[in-house]
Amino acid sequence: MRCVSVSIVLLLLLIGGEGMCQQPGEIPPKAVPVDGVVVGGGAEAIKDKTSVGVNKQFKVRGESLHLNKAVSALCDEMSKGVYELLGEKRPESGFYPVNVLLYSKGNAKRQNVFKTLVTPVSGGGFKIELIVDVREQIDRSDLEAGVMQAIVMERTLRTDPVLNAESVLDVPRWVSDGLLGALRWKEGSRNRGMFEVLTRKPELYPVGRLFTTKQKDITGMGETVKALYEASATAMVMSLSRQKEGKAGLAKMLSEVAVFEGEPEELLRRNFPAMNVGKRGLQKLWNLQLAEMAVPRLIDTETLMATEEKLREELFFSLVGKDRLERRVAVKDYDVLAGLEQRERLQATMNLRQKLVHLSYRAYPDYQPILAEYGFILTSLARGEMDGVGARLERLAEERQIMYEKGQRARDVLDWYQLSRARDLKGDFTGYKRLLEKMKREKKRSEGNAVSEYVNQMEKLMTRGAK
Image 1 (tube, rainbow, N blue to C red):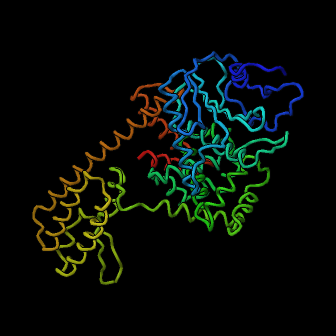
Image 2 (tube, rainbow, N blue to C red; image 1 turned 90 degrees about the horizontal axis):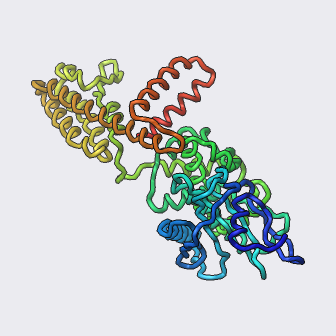
Image 3 (cartoon, rainbow, N blue to C red; image 1 turned 90 degrees about the vertical axis):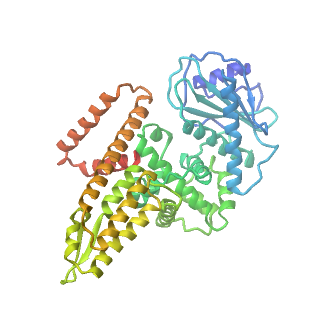
C-alpha cells in the first residue's frame, strides 16, 4: 500500500478502511482498529484549526477553533482526573499522542458517535486517532466517553508497546464508562437516583449484564436503561478502587485491559488478588458500593415532588388503643384527639412533630413555611385548642395542591423540552400531553399482559428519574 498524505489517511479512516500507511519492507502494523466504524465515505476536507492541550498529548482538529479549544481543555481535565483517581502523577512526556478529529461536515453514514483507531508510528510507538461525529447535536457525555476510551487505550499501549500483529485493541465500555462515572462522583456530581433504584432492584442491571455490554447495546438504549447502565459501571469501578491496594490494582488493570482477551473475572483476579472475584463475591461488593452511594447527604435537598410525597406519608397520628393495637389516623381527622387525655394528645402530636422536623432537614425550600405551620397546628392540638384548626388545615392542603400541580407542570415541560430537542423528534407541548394520556390508556389495556410487571417497574423508574 503506497504512502499518502495525512489528510487522505484521515479520510480513509472516516471511510472505514483498516489499512495504514506502510513503506515496502516495513514491519506490518502491530495493532488494528477497534471493531465498528463511526462514519463512511464522502467526508469533506476541514480547515486545519488545531488546538493543543496543556501537556501537548491531545491535539484537537475541527472547523471551529473555539470548539477545538473547549474539547482539548476537556481532554486535559479528564486525563488529570484519571491519574488523580489512580494516585499517580500525570506524565509530562513519554506518552503517545492522541489526535481528536471533530467531524462536522460530509455525507458519511452515521453509525456510532465516536471511533478510536491506532496507527503505528515510523521508528516505533503508536498514534491514537479519535474521530467524533459532531454533525448533529452531541451530548457532552458521548464526547467524554470517546475521550475516556482513548485515555485508557493510550495507557495500555504505553505500558505494553510490543503487540502482536493480530492484537485487537478494545477497551470494555464498562471500564471506560465506569471511570467516567467515578470522576463525576469525585467531582461532586451526586445523582443518587439510579444508585438508589439499583440498590432496591439490582436485577435491573446486574454485574453479569454489565460485563457483556457492548457499544451496539449502548447505542440502542433508552435514557432510563442507559442511566442504569452508567450507575452500574460507576459502582463497579468505585468498588474496585476501594479494595486493599485498590488504586494500584486499578492502575495495573488499565495498563492491560485494552489487549486482555480473557473473562472479566480473570482480569480482576490478576490485578486484585485480595478481592473475592467470584460471581457472587463481585455481586456482593457491587451491592455494598451501590448502597453506600445511594445514601443521601445531610446537605442534599429533596425535590418539590419528593417532598410532597413524603409529607403525604407522614401526615398521620399514631394512636394506640386499649387493645394495644396501633392505628394511623389522618391529620384531617384531628377531632379524634378531642376524646383523649392530655398526655395521650401530647404523645400523638409529639411523634408526628418529630417526623416533620426530620423531613424539614432536606425538604424543598418552599415547604419550610408549610412544615412550620403544621408544627403550630400540632401545638394547638396538644393543648386541646381545636377551634379554627380545620380551616388552617384546609388552607395548607390547598397551598400544597397548587405547589404540587406547578411541580408536575414544570416536570412535564422539562421532559417535553428534552424530547423535542432530541434527534429526529419534533412536536409541541400539546402533542406531548396527548402522548402521555395515550400511554396511560395503553397501560390500562395491557394490565393482563405477560410483560405488564416489567413495564410497571420501568414506568416507576422513569417517573422517579424525571422528578
